[in-house]
Image 1 (cartoon, rainbow, N blue to C red):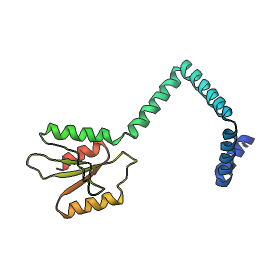
Image 2 (image 1 turned 135 degrees about the horizontal axis):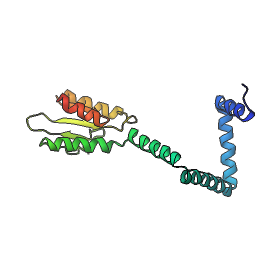
Image 3 (image 1 turned 90 degrees about the vertical axis):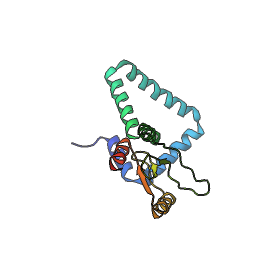
Image 4 (image 1 turned 120 degrees about the horizontal axis):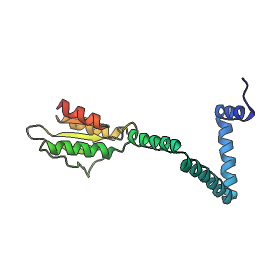
Length: 165
């Protein structure tokens, strides 16, 4: 089975980054020179999408499911942070925001539970968040003082945190 011409051109472009960059530059210049072209292109894409989306319930269900999955996978850290706060308050503790105005990298929350030491918790966005070097240094300093520091990414991590303490 042979490739058709557009497929061959597309594959060649994908394998050649310089050619891809040149193509992008040409397209940017073309649309910058005539903004109406871009408006027309967006209008056509919008019409085509709306026509399919409005008339095909199966397509609409697929798009909605994809959107929900994407939101669930990339949930903002506030979701897990609220869950942590609710769990701590249900146990009769406090979970205040922790801010150190003199130094950057402080953990997001302090977990204060009756009969337990203070835990410091850094919340990160699921699958996306990373611990920055200045945060790592702050965590190291807290651990050197005898405190426990946790980095949590999801609700499952919050459940694991409570299972371990």
